[in-house]
Image (cartoon, rainbow, N blue to C red; front, side):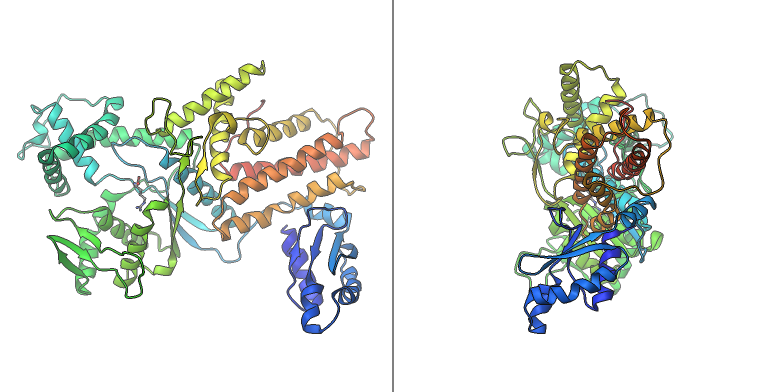
Length: 568
Ligand code: ARG
């Protein structure tokens, strides 16, 4: 049950107005408080405390209100009845939307022949959690891994392999696709080709220009380039799959990116030409998206580059078209680095003016940068830009060190689950749009706002519940303040999931998890459950609270794509 919504709707109805309901920090006097009297006093021309006194009896008429009182200049505190809290919390916590939508989510978006880097961490984690939130609410989502598999990096890698092995037949224009070639690419070597080739291209204009020719021919279906591409494509897709598993994110509904979108380019071009939207600029075909009221630079959208090749821009527009005819989404949401903001603004405008998709149905969630302790983009120890695996490895190592220090022994799966929680939770708890500092040592602490703390709380609750032989009680007992606060915390789950979705704020889920764990741990410390001196009915009641707390925490943990280990 969405307690907040239930209570505020009932109060609004009772008072015939919309009041602002808050959850006070100090719960001693009330579970909720409102400044309604202070707001209404103005128009009623009354003193707020006086008006509050008039409102109180109306509130106490509500069957779930135990008590209402006035505080300070006219705040009203509302205390709920124990049975009401108990019964509400006993119902399943399952938030549902009243307005289900079909939503295409574009995240992950890994690149072929380029190793995954730190930038892919946030799109994967935030995108996946957002997907889980939307699904829990009952939206139909399709996740698109818009793979970078059609652009310049492909050409650079092909050009680089040509430099290393000019004798291979792939580079001949008359290459016969049925030729069997005795050539294998070593997966760990593949990741070095792109950086090497792009560095080399910067110094060697001829190589650069050759790569551009390769790109155009490749996109035109050059058989030899394609045969070579198929080889490294497979290696890259395998690596992407490993990452998806390692990050414990849901499998993508579509692993289809630029190359798939390219199939729709002709259809899209027809639309653009009919509307006369393509113009020529320095040999390139472009679409003007600038508006008169733009106060920042708004370059034209690149339809083809000066060599006639497809671009990141053109395939992205074709991907919108493809999604529209495949999923007919109500919205399309992209999760990428903030720095792609301009690209998406252009894409949304072109989609609008071409009539392909409404500007207002798009969203770009741009995330900030992950920095090291020095405040600069996080690097590995040897000073290189960190790969995604480097990050996870560094955190695994930090967890191992911590566990060894504590004298515990935990198996590798448990270590990996803890490390994953550290990485993902730290990512999720920050506002997506902001940069954050990534420090393997602090994110792995078992205390404070960390993933391991969340898991530890869940493991502890599970272990209490496993040891219990009594049956949890379904009937309400008198509840003390720690029990009460925990139950109300549990009852905030539904509201949190709705708000996280509505505000596109996955951090709300992570921070809710932390708050819930704080309540659970306070309850755990102050309210003994299995101790011999605890009366049977109290034990049964507390077991009931512990059970629903565990279930709600487990749901929250699942939204973040973390795994709860058996022990910690
Ligand atoms: N592959 C791109 C990158 O790694 C991100 C693609 C994002 N999605 C899109 N439809 N443009 O930067």
